[in-house]
Amino acid sequence: MNHRKQIASLIFKSLTIEKEALKKQFSERKNEIGYFYIDNLLPKDLIDQIYQNLPKLSDSELKKNIREYKYVAYQMNKYNPLLEEVIYAFQEEKIVSIISEICGLQNILPDKNLYAGGISLMKKNNFLQPHIDNSHDKDRKLWRVLNLLFYVSPNWKLENGGNLELWNNGLEHAPIEIESKCNRLVVMATHQKSWHAVNKVKTDDVRACISNYYFSKTSLLPDDNFHITLFRGRSTQKITDVLLRIDNGFRKSVRKLFKKGIRENPHHYKNDF
Picture: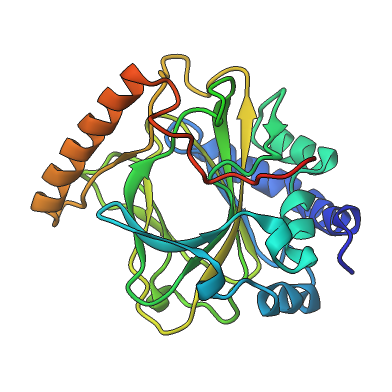
């Protein structure tokens, strides 16, 4: 099975069964960083197929700097067709609708361009520093409101690292750590207070995540303003934090002069839809 509508039907079935519990999860946290997660989203045999057909690191784009160290794949027609079907299954209308309902949102739109989405691969010592996501889509017309993270690495354990961290109460407090458990979907709100990160991978296995973003014509927070992706250091990384603040300031200055940056962010799917 690799047709996106069939995969979407499987996702929809799992979400429907757990819908009320997921609503409660998100609602209890919506005043901080709203999020929910659901396990065993898809049949195991399909997860195995997805994992076996992931891009190799050598066929992915390396992002390595003070902000992040990871590999990404987003030009989906370069890879096994199953991967594109899975990613876009999360953009099917009924999936967008039920996730919007769970999160208590309306008029939510998926992103066919996969701006900053697609597949993230992280090997040993890879990481993603604490950050808030860019507030808008690639054309700066829509607000980014939800981040969907679907993990597919078999037998992943908390001690492997590479787990999602959420700073519900600000960077000065300890984060919530959410294991990158295989076949787990995490949906989190994105706004100017939704600081999150991926802690360092400690194993030789590769942590794989399929990601999508949902957008809206209005921001989640009434006082949210346009912002680029902003990074910070952890409480133990004083020098890194200073360097990242300087980096943030430089990149913000550039965006004031050039609305879409000096060059267009290449991280989106270039395809004739």
